[in-house]
Length: 291
Length: 311
Image (cartoon, rainbow over all chains, first blue to last red; front, side, top):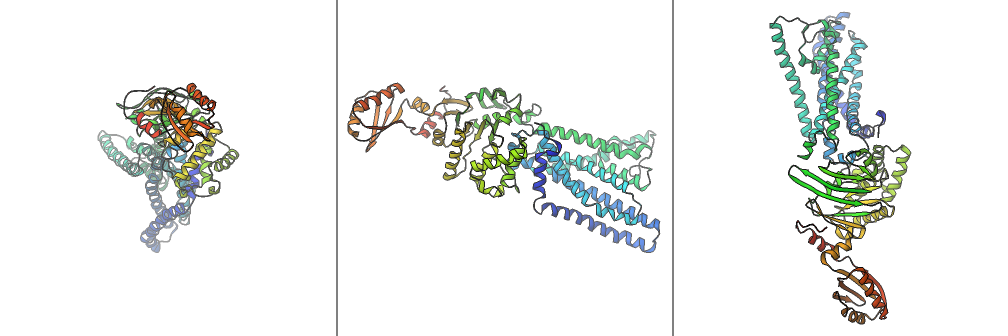
């Protein structure tokens, strides 16, 4: 039986359960509270004093860009921190609550279950991201950032959330306990981030030693969303000259697009493996269940 | 409705189900009995498409569970021995959710929810939160859930486990009602007298092997070689006892007032001859029935751990 995308029972039920009670509202308040608090501290510490002695249009724009960059990085970190907590328990918690079997013996496909879980987590993340828009819009008072910049940034956030969310879902299908799945998801993200940077530094070192050009981007960076964010921010701040945290320029203006595509491909693979894994009568991975 | 042939399930070197065969016709209520770890749940999970068999075939309404599990899921309702419920979901929302998982339309879900809540006597709890229900109510709700898509076959794994006596009686009543609706039911339980009363046939499984499959009273007489007969007479009980003592294949005649109990080793034809004799001799017989006897004793006898297969 095929479930329509907009008529996924898992998605509708999860949304209903999530939105019931104070948990979600409290989550949004806490999320925005952290952002507002840090943004306020940043403003009074760095921006207010500099604007006090220079109130030119240019100084205002610089202040806007500075706050925007700070908020963009802050929101990115929060997405990396919140998304695993949203998705790493999606399947393992069903196992813990002993509801997974009840779900699997219905005519809802494994695809429907995984996509429903991913979409419900993503919709929650989307809610957090969208609710931060008013905070970001304060930047328009200062200037220096266009709505197009903001759309690009928020699109990248959603892609990052999907990629991180799919890692969480993947581990949720592997581990029986939510705590284990969550911890392993965070550790994997941290390890991937660190390894990609160390490996990239090593590859660049070799590349430059052999007289390579400045446009070289080491391939491990393509799996690191922080590199994509750095590219977007550098593009926006420098007006399109691109680069990744001081790395070369050239074709790298669109690095974040390749970075996004790579993350989406990996996310797709992880979702596919998750779908196969939760199918109780699948032939792949059955050695695991029989052992 | 359900055909299991030479079903084998292995976990590494351990064999959980060993060449198990079973056949249920439409309307059968089949009790699956066996000690813990005998392979009842594994068999049921394979039928419910929640596990793959190592070898053998399982067909539900002619559909192979390994070939088209999705179609099989539409034909059966499964109630596991342990299950949980979602927090923050009301009783009618719970059923509605599972109804939508079976692709029922909004109107169908609404109709089925009302019908099933009435069947399991939870209509007054429609707007209560599921996690606030008692264990017995949750069991009944889970049974209603398994019926949402109106399946032909019900797989019920220990549906009355953990229930108090009242809840057990209520559950038994619901299952009897389902039986009268023509549902085919495969039910496992440790409460043997309840199964005996409810089921048309019974299967005893031990160490993954079916050691007996057939009618409950056949099992009793097959194991003990004796059938327990209960006779109630209006009067002349002493004359009846005298007469019975003179007959062959009769042992241990006991009784109080006008109720007699005896162990008989003859077949059903000879049994009817015995009744005819009593009536011809002018004994006012009110009832003449085969009693269930101590099924627990029989169960212990069957599952005492011998490798010998009775069937």
